[in-house]
Image 1 (cartoon, helix red, strand yellow):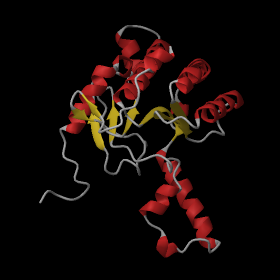
Image 2 (cartoon, rainbow, N blue to C red):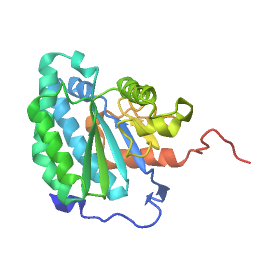
Image 3 (tube, rainbow, N blue to C red):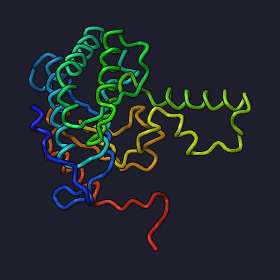
Image 4 (cartoon, rainbow, N blue to C red):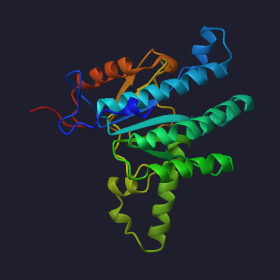
Length: 252
């Protein structure tokens, strides 16, 4: 299976089909349930096809020379879903971590997780630790999986840590700036996303990378996540490339 990732990282400007490729793409993977409902299938079948879409997308990202890919796998609010659906999702995560990590490692993919881990079962935490340790030195693509993640909680935690250091006179409050806050986020070692994609037609960020998304290009697609593939990703990149990014400035 490692042969599917055989193409090497390009050394020059990253391009796909003549389009500039963003360094970091983040995706809100939405629509598994609706995909299953349209086919009168159990909801778990949508999640299983969604897992296949993850495999396709990671491969496509590696082939296109994207440096960072962040996937919103499970939000801190998703615990509100029925217990059997949560169990199904965690079961799929276990299968992914057991079956895919070795291939990802041999393909040069680094795997990172962001989110609160204490609520996860001990075996899932062990699989996460193994995946991160095994792939820590890989550099072809960094795959960031947001699991039990919520941006509000992330920002609050960062503020608390900064406040603790300020109280201990380790930080001058006057020195607190954008760079310092970013340093205390879970994504401190990851560049902010250039583009955030959300599938299924919904048009909101749902507590995902709110600080990091300040200047990201947002692309909302009608495509349901289980149908997502390289062609859809390339189409989103073409949309991204057609936009003018001014970061608050303007052309002369």
